[in-house]
Length: 614
Image (cartoon, rainbow, N blue to C red; front, top):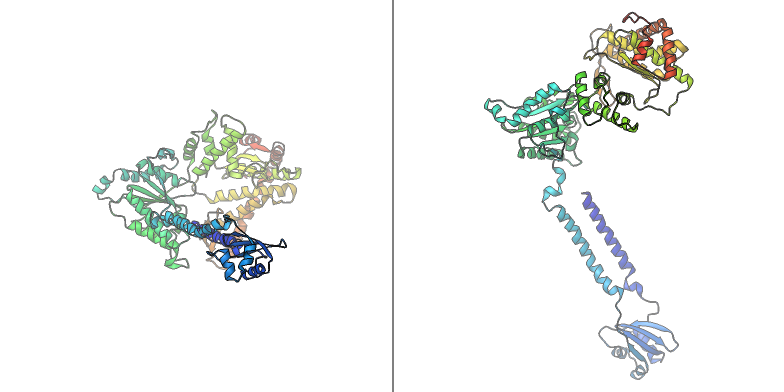
């Protein structure tokens, strides 16, 4: 459409140019001001004023006896003598006038005029030829946007990366689930002979970066079938009906090349619950979803097309998508545990020159909560860092520093703290570190630093000692104490507080409120207050519906405040009891800026650490 509008604009521009040329080169505009009529010329001849006439075609160049000149035009096809006589010129006087016949010269207008006459037809011809060229394959070529833009990943194509189950780590249970899909695509008859119906749809559910797309491509390569990949947002276009048309085109292509796999990434963008929008059934997204539902329901028993889809927000999907017969199987992809992280790191370090001392197990221990994509980014950052340092191999220190860069951001070397700010930051981080070291349910301190990274003026890197799927009330209370220990250390040492604790206070307030409203850990009992929605793009939950009274809201605020005060009192008691150790750690931190795990453990080794004995 844009090309057609562009060509049409070009035609209009050409016409404007032609009009301007005609206006400038109009013969009427070239007439000279001294041109006289034939009757005037005859009168002057009879008066004996004309001495010479030069004839060039129908143009007359007249020279008078007083040396003045003029022009005129005679009738075409009639001689000058006959023309003058017809106007009443005296034949005897005409003989006294010198008449010279000059061959007509070729004029610019003589060849420009036919060109300007033919040019519009040529332009129109080119314009329509371009339209016909675009539509040479029929309406399907002209309206190509109605076709599916799905990308084909052919397992037999050697130019593309061949991903197999060996390239997918940390998802052992998910690989076992999809292995049946591979077996069906390779040997469908043995399932059909048993009367088994293979799942038509497989829904991969997991957080971003956990390997949903990677697993789907591995299934296609293991089965050796065409793999059509398309994002949910690619179905929707400006024009009405395009989404449904692309859905039909996608499934038609997959059926022609069966056995095959159709993979729809981020299906929640078109598969959300219907009936909640203003457009009703005529809304474009709903029409697209209806078409996908119809296509999946229309698969015959022996159709060897499997639909795989991925989402990180399954709670928003329409129930019709999740019913048996459509997405029969749902596979949950969790974030990898320590063993899975180590395997993923090995995969992403295959083509990287690791130094002999690089210990991926330690890296896996320091990266709880990292997804497969995070670990791939981590190894890439380590390779970049080693290259920047002109190394030939990636050392362990490069990988460990890359963890901090991924978590907190790059070092802000230009952001220099003043002596007072450095001292405040040192006591703040020392407070966090001591609380983590002495509380029984707190995480283990791996590093303390007052070097600015990202938005933080300093940080205490504390990681869990083991993988956890559940948290207890005691663990939450210790976490609150650790969060408020930096704030309390500032207040204890300087008798005032700074803005450096703002992020800690925000996290503590949010955690304390969750303990009351979501986890039922307060005196209000095992009740969940409010309806919440997870906001993935900013990383926390937001209450979207309030289902409690103002009186209960006041009690919630009271209980939240109680948890915060208890944590602050516990932090103050711990730091007062270990005031000398707090000063010692802060002093060394101001001098060295960074304290690693081993050095920190030596600093507090003289102190008897009794977990829980605060």
